[in-house]
Length: 451
Ligand code: NDP
Ligand code: 2IT
Image (cartoon, rainbow, N blue to C red; front, side, top):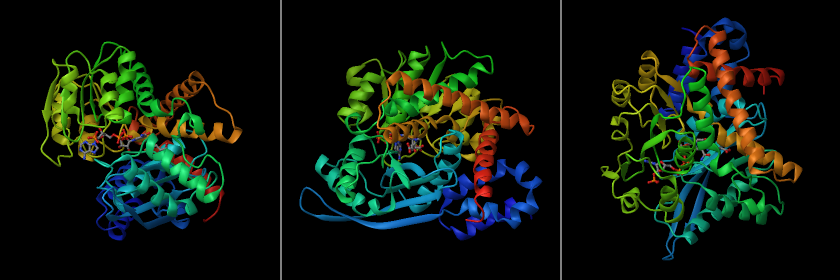
């Protein structure tokens, strides 16, 4: 059996009940075979893959908090410090009732390669809790965030591990966590990114993941002689990534026809208005059903309660699909619908929103497919820029950060494209991104000995 297949089997056996982690490992290892097979004896001797798939450290802790009625609750908090070969651990905190250790291991593993692709000095990590922020008051969110940080603070630091936002964690939560960290540690440092602008946050960090997704997509299309202007897009999700992806796509002259949330999805033939989404999702924090009150010609379709999928969105005929909600929301049937409707490109704003079968189907049918660890890297790249600004105690202008973000996204596309070409897989940006990320991490790991 090949080294890679042995490791995939080992990951499944040693991490039972963690299917998302298995999926992420399988996707990466399957696409780096060409590099691993050529160096198998040495890699086995150095246990390269064993070290790659085992997090350096995992912290799990109790998070007690009290609700507005005086009742106590206990959630589980986690931080997975996956790989620090190229810099301090870096990656977001997910707050969602579905959070498990396996989910955070999948996200942390992805983050290692993503961060390497940005070319900035950041290792990979991820954390979060099974706390459900939906329907909680501001005070309850603050109570949770303070309690979460009361344990997390001893494991992180500006040169150790720098968390940020992710699904369910935005500027409000980062603010509460930063305040508690400072109070406990008595140090004012860039320990979190995505902070408010008045206390060390970077301009353009809020917009960065969505904007970066479109900078990447535009470059990928341009290198395939396609102009993004005039194209139609389907977006899923309506949170941080989706909103700013819609804004930038619209500014680039594309028309976004859809978006979605946990309750349902919107079809707006005139083009989704991101200013309305901002009002509904960032200010009112309510359901997308409200959208039709602002735009009576748009159509809202409700989902069954607990439905994790965005099937409706992927039935709409579009040129470009931009999944920006969460993992595994495009399956093989969705991919078939999109291809039958003539989709040209799929670029992932979320982490692993397309399952393995659907990804393969897109690639086999000539669809340009941008994997999240490359195309959504603009968020963490701008977090890296926030860390630089914090270190030099300066703030850069929006234009300066945005220009750096653009050039990073363009260089990530070319790193993936070049690696794919180098190994005879032209156009396979999944393989290209994985190989380029792996080579960088491997190089740093090798130089640092067996640690
Ligand atoms: P948000 O919490 O801001 O938005 C998430 C969106 O997905 C919301 O519209 C939410 O609906 C929807 N959603 C969440 N869970 C479900 C579900 N079970 N079924 C249907 N819809 C659901 O998160 P972000 O925009 O920050 O993150 C989105 C994705 O992008 C995630 O995969 C994240 O890991 C990834 N990502 C985020 C980055 C960032 O900088 N924020 C950077 C790179 C990747 P509702 O509004 O109803 O809650
Ligand atoms: O998945 C991701 O890249 C993020 N949630 C952003 C992480 C960060 O540190 O900015």
